[in-house]
Length: 80
View 1 (cartoon, rainbow, N blue to C red):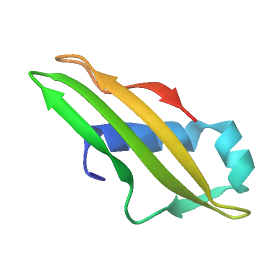
View 2: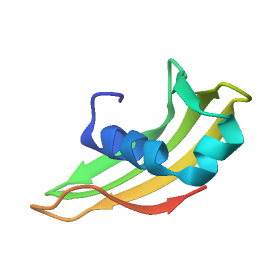
View 3: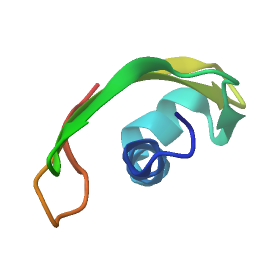
View 4: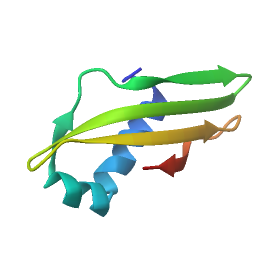
């Protein structure tokens, strides 16, 4: 799951999030095993993850929902 394009897009967006950086006191890593799922059929896809973000001050769990259209990259629809 960590090697998927959807997961990589999620982590890149987490690292740009000022809110998550503030809440964690700075990101120092990610949990070993994200939970969630990825579904892809004929180029259409949906993915949902719960990613543990390890912080200098505190750890947080980030929920990410993504969708994919044929011949396009994964796009984040919601991140909490």
